[in-house]
Length: 135
Image (tube, rainbow, N blue to C red; front, side, top):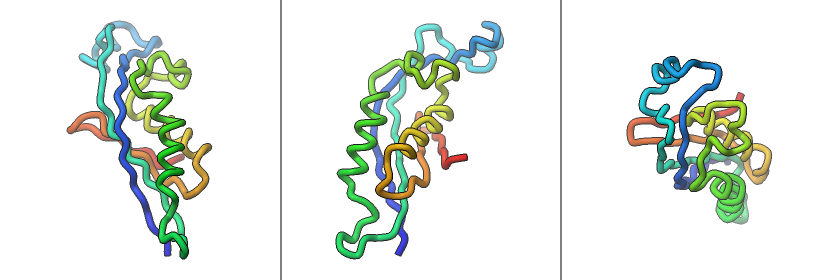
């Protein structure tokens, strides 16, 4: 039997949405108040969905401690309470939540092998969420 497991994590980070290839006016037009030179922060809710066969002995798709350890070590420790603009992952791209979702997906895809990574979903605000399921 194949099943899906979704686990939720919370972290906080700040960013400034700004593209060096655009003029100041174009950045203000594209990003509005999110282009504030001092940045702004979010309390992100990250949902990670994995799938796989349910183990006949444990009755689980994967061990939650393994998933928590990977997400904690590879994502939360990397992005919690940081300015995303200063992270190596965003040296060449704007740290939008769309891009952050893709970065997190690829980090977890490389590191978590105990189950198939289906998607990551990032809730930026009560009104905005972004989902990435791979290429």
